[in-house]
Image: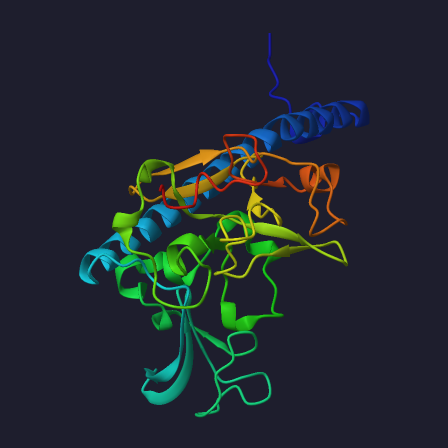
Length: 286
């Protein structure tokens, strides 16, 4: 008996129904894998962000150690600095500097933090916190805007109680020794805001510590739970952690804001006593 090997022409071909079944199975597998991939991507972004704020608080404490115990000031005004080999006037803030302006970006005599060019070394703590000073939260990059280029690609806030003192007035930072229970005092956090009266979603430029602003209480919430409804916080004792925002329903200074609107964007407060008028996680302990 002879046996014939089937040729290519005699091999079984997929029918249309079989192809559709295979495509359907592939599509089903993709739909099952995508949520897991998105969760893994967000977990990586959250970990990178947590690393950022941990670098930032470590650099802040190193700065205080080198400056008689004073925390970095929110603003240092303007001064002449070497900017990539050229002496320029730089508007300096805790998060970095800016030189030039929208009208004259390369000007040697103007410095505008709102429209100038971002200059990370303008920060007094730039040399201490490494790569965290030049970037921001990976989960917030798609929200970054070019409206304020002098602020750079940043997405955190800094407590005014640390940077401007108990009065909230411009000046040197607060002395570290004034704070008790430092493990409960927030210094940096994931931040965003709903901007009244237009009610637009916006980042909070670095330095706008409106949660933790002396005299302002919790009037304008800006703690952003962008990591699976949680946000990262760096605390004054040097540790960093993740927690959920607390939502309040009444904001007398901004009547356009309301709890459902803020919850929809995961914007709330860092709070534990459920009292909207207190700053227990920011103010120095008497």
